[in-house]
Image (cartoon, rainbow over all chains, first blue to last red; front, side, top):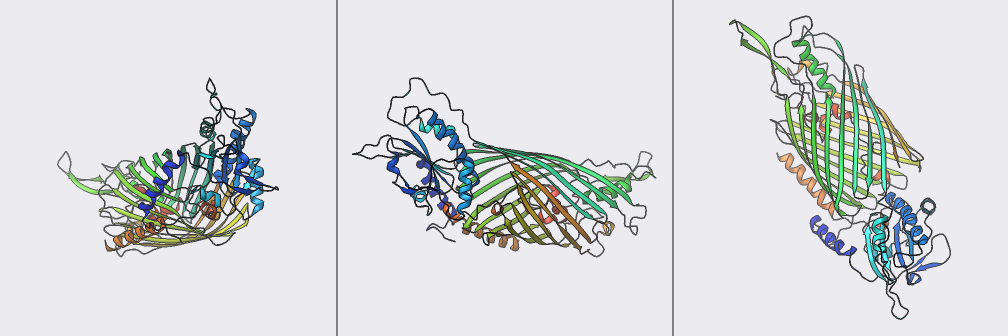
Length: 547
Length: 73
């Protein structure tokens, strides 16, 4: 890892911001260049563009946004101005695509074919890119050579920017350049807008044990247009459970097949308000039980207080769990494409499936009677989360996530998760992660996991996964009969593949999961079958397409 | 509380160390591969939506459903 001479994150980021701010507007001289043509004889020199406007499009084959930018530039700038014989003032306009990647030239050739780029040069050591001070690609520069004279060469930088803002923005810059007469009537507004990238995805997941079957499935649609990105997803979850009471402490309980569902949805919005800054907003809602354990626990209370064989106990109500939430945040890309910090605030209101206790009271005729006293039903949760994602070396990308959560009547909960992705070679990638979670008075959890992925070909990868998890057991609630989970140790492993077919990507993953509970002596025996050790199976299938 | 402070300190240190790295665009080929990104896409994610029901300490989002309190009172 290499550090700048200013090691502090904030100092460095401020410097980068200050350095980047005037870059887009200053009319400075363009550095001269002399680059070999890509895939052809000859060289491309800056002076070849005397009297013209040239758009430099720095790209690499592995840069997904570059492909879209190069394609749009070829159609929306190169061909657009060729058809009009120049810009609004008649100055010729040319796009020069500049490749910065020397490895795997066959993939660069395929990139050029896909984008249709007509004029391509190589800057394989990135020297020219560095001279322009680029921090990320796609990197676009508009050089104005219309003021050039043989006795006084003059090429000025009219625009430079990391990231593609769309052809409309570039045309506005280009049409303002040149020495000819400005058109008496404004040029028609360019038809080209910022390119849209759409992603659609569907996934489903199954977890099963001898007495449980859980599913979670959903679809997601994401659209990025210019400075705006929005996303909507809906999910469906099901819980199928063979409920068993502990007859030693619940003599009236009986075995039962449970079936419950949950529907949920979320909408996310990201809006870029300034070059390095995005604002984030989200809204979500769900209707149904949040997990299989609450389905089991709620059924225990249903049997006890609403047993069809006996009169219904006063005070009991059928649970109707649901919730809604909202979030807002700020994302700061303080080094383009390689360093992002995010701050998020969240709120969630939930109506839960409450717990019950027996309560004695004097009824209207003066007799002592029993009724069910309901536990807390409404919960509010506030959260603050901060995350930072960084490229540390040419082979290493890391992410740190911190979350603080406060729920009604509970202590502050803190969670940390660190992830690191390492390119072990051309074909091997290791993705490791670990985390902790803690809440007073007595919950602590930690976990770590590793995924190893091998790229058999550009369209097929195999992966193996493993994870270890341990906690100290859920916090004892204040009910006389606790339903809190005892301490848990768990392992899971799996194998899978990712397969690309055209624009579609499929992922399949499956493996076993083992849970090993450590019951607290004399506590929680009512739910001994819920917290039994199990051998689980877990399977995931996902499909995604970008268009 | 001591362990919490220790965790926060280690996390912040990791954050500061991360923040001082700059890798030029011409060196980002390997870290730009889709399977090297921190993606929310299910086809590139190693996470499981069902797993946090079994292992409650995995959850970093959500309210009581992602909490360590099965029934709160």
